[in-house]
Amino acid sequence: MPAADDLFRPTSDAASAQPAPEPRQRRVRAVADDAEPAGPRKPSGRVRHDEKMTVYVTSDELLDIEHARLTLRREHGLAVDRGRLVREALALVLADLEAQGADSALVQRLLDE
Image (cartoon, rainbow, N blue to C red):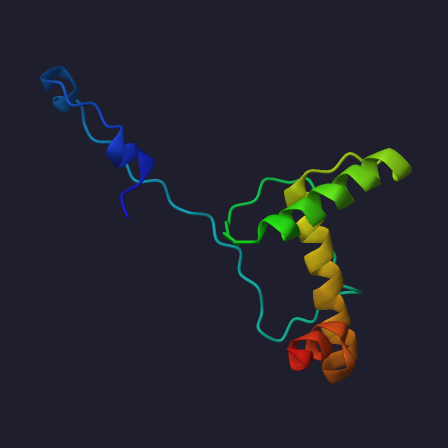
């Protein structure tokens, strides 16, 4: 897939006389395979996220997410966006899976399907 620089490059003759910019290198953080996370898994919170994942939900599920977001704001004074809400929920489910294994709520719900 072409990068944004490739799609929006100058196309005039004057621009072609300039040397092409060097491609930007993507930053990769090395993590040891045997590294155990210190403490329980935590969501990333309000930081710039380099990775993207698309998840399709039903209209009812989206309404449930919006309802939860508005409840957090109204009853708890927490203004969070849908992405933050989903990342927090995902962190809770993954921490439960890591701690409880086969007895986790995720495994039990998936087995009930």
